[in-house]
Image 1 (cartoon, one colour):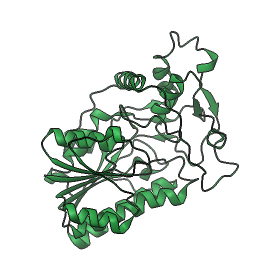
Image 2: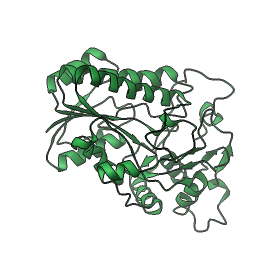
Image 3: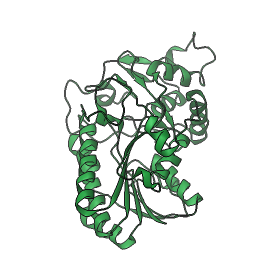
Image 4: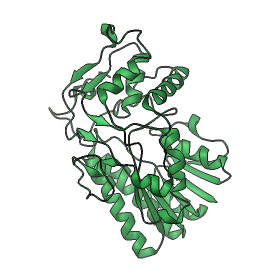
Length: 341
């Protein structure tokens, strides 16, 4: 099949490109390299550097390619930062997705797989299942919820198929180690590789279910091909949750010899909660098992070990901050204002 993938130089997108090429598809990728890298681009793919906020160019490219299937993974996936960059978050999440959908309609694409987020559930009682209402509590979640609704409406009007995937807390090789705003596993590892403290927001008792990339990619791919996934919303990720403190100790175990005697310069530093951060956020995987055959095969311990091994092969990365946030107030995390990470 002729397949178009957005965010193809990023973390999840590049893994999906690799997977689909391995099984014999012709893949066209697009990325603006704001969070991805050319080193992630598969040489067997046909790559275009493009900012998806550019409506005419985005639509024209999709119409030119005429993909049979589109996977939209490009996003400004910085949930915690979105309260301080609300315009950027909305433009890169909602507006860009609308451009993809318009292009898909004009190119007569059969199906679009939209990558959403567990953030659409907001601060409800976990584990979250797909049939509970969306109640986002942050700008990122709002933009993703709106993207989902827009996809449904345009599908009804123009007749293309869609599948919405809600992955959560995905980590693994090729993740952006230099982003100080997102990817907790990558941030902790990069700090420790630099021989410095990492920061934990709140008391570290927040709970998340961490998904290793190899356990997510094949199922996102399958969502584009199975007739039974058309019109469905599916959580993709494990149901086993861990606290941030548990995650921190698992990562620390690869950098210290004794967790009971952590050197002062490597100990986590606790700072106030980030505004609007949901304390408990993890989902059910029942629907993913039923429709996609989902299996979580990589325990957190094994996944972290693989991530650390890859990160050490790449080496420590200098954290890349935005030149400035759109809003800076007393509630802006000091880790960002003072560039502490």
